[in-house]
Image (cartoon, rainbow, N blue to C red; front, side, top):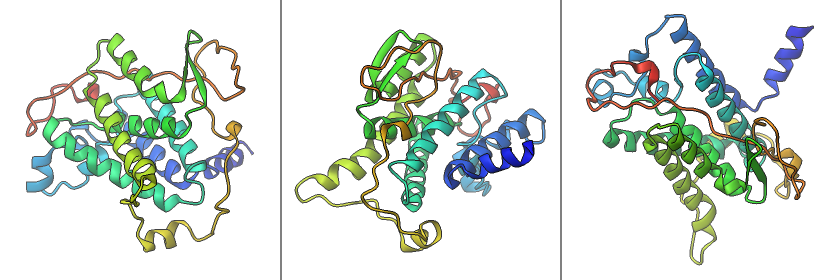
Length: 269
């Protein structure tokens, strides 16, 4: 009975969110059980191009570090904001959500090539958080029950939290930048005089992911668009909007040699 309930709840998760978060958990467990090494997962352009290790283009987004509180916080943020986006602004448009994933991953990889970054999961999460925050500007949130703010400030709160922890904010800035570029191309530019949609979804993706037409007038209620993970005592919400979120701790680390693995890859993002 418990297994059936768990399986039913698992299958109720939207397909893109389910696939991505499951892959992240599997990658972390595989490293924890020493089935694979982090050296086999990190992004290395030299190995990708000259040794045809194409899987690194994907696994770099799946590994958040070893099993720790940092991993738990990262996976919670990834799951919550990925699912909220897929069930609200991308409801009935799963193919468009897939295009968002592809666009965000490709742009992040291009930046990582020049910035010499090796693990990009945290940047990808920040991209999801940024897009969600811009599409839900009226939702009020709080930070440990102390700091109240509107949803669009959430990426900046996460950035400030990384600074307070003494972590490098380079990967945070990349995630926010990629999220802003997507938001501008998808939500801002098409609504300008003479604007048009640049990111167009191929028909075959629509046939695969969107077989059923959704009501174009569907608009999820605020309670269907939760504000985030509840950390500690939450402040009362005067606007009756969803509240509560904070930032995951992310270990700092970088490596200046793109052709060699890091000394301690488990602490890389």
